Amino acid sequence: LAPRLRKVLQSQGMIAADVEAAVHPDKGGWYKVPWTAVPDLVAQRKVLLVGGHAAVPSRDLVSLVVQDFRAAVSKGLSEVNRRWRDMFPDSDARLRPLVAGLSQRYLGTTDYGAAAARHGALTLAGLPAASARNFPLCMQNLMGHLKQDAHLKHHGRLQLSLFLKAVGLPMEEALVFWRTASAPKMPADKFDKEHAYNVRHAYGKEGGRKDYSANNCLSLVKAMGGPQDHHGCPYKRMDEAHLRTALARAGCEGPKADEAVAKARGGHFQLACACAFEGVHKAPMDRGINHPVEYYAESRRVYEEREGGGSGAAAAAAGGGRRT
Image (cartoon, rainbow, N blue to C red; front, top):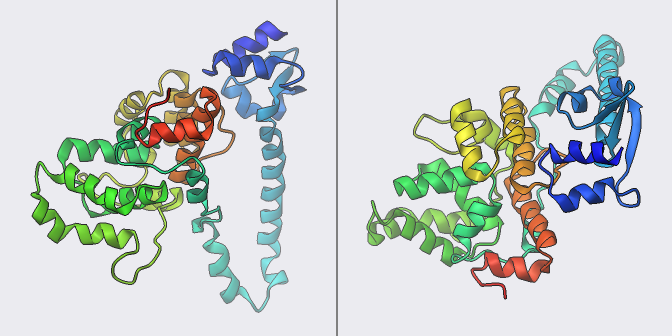
């Protein structure tokens, strides 16, 4: 079955080395399950079908767990809904708002900045290359409009500033970056009067001196704005034509772009971002993206491992140095 398994993996855009590692019996691992147990993988053509069974790679086994987990959660929620007043006869007013708000809460880690820091600091000299290579689409979109228009509206500037802070760009270099990017439409003295304070504030050096965190994906999905705003999640805000163009510009084309667009159309914006990651990096992303800095850190990790230079090589690239 090895040749047929290779074709399945190659159709997903995986590079040759990863394909061989997945097919190799000592490194990979495939599991024979009824195809009805993994309908999502069958629909995405991620498995090999043989005689009513699906050969599932170990990295996609989570799909088996998800099916049972969803069924168990659905059954449990139905039971709780049926017995709510019997279980909590005197607590309805207190618990109902709490339960209703669970879907709007971010329960993931907020320590992605530490993960990004492990790959070395980001410098102004290395910013253009890192933007094209390692930034998620939401940040690439902001960088592109800033370069095109020499201006971003307030929420766009704040979103990008906090992200750059989180991935390690020093404040003084951030000030130079924003001053230079705004120069075609704003003299330096005007920038220093009107916008420099906001950059320093984002870095916690002005006002209340709070250590502001970069926006997570949930907050970006919920962000609202007009047609001239470019902040928020592009998988939610862009129409299909603009999204396909943006994905192609980022290096995601073919089946993975189609999958990302389909996920976005279905309202699964973070899974769409994960599909784009796989299309750009030709590497698996087995979970949805929860934070733009998570995307950046994972991108740096993939390239470091692939290029075999360790963190020092990739850090030199992001820092504007040259690998020898």
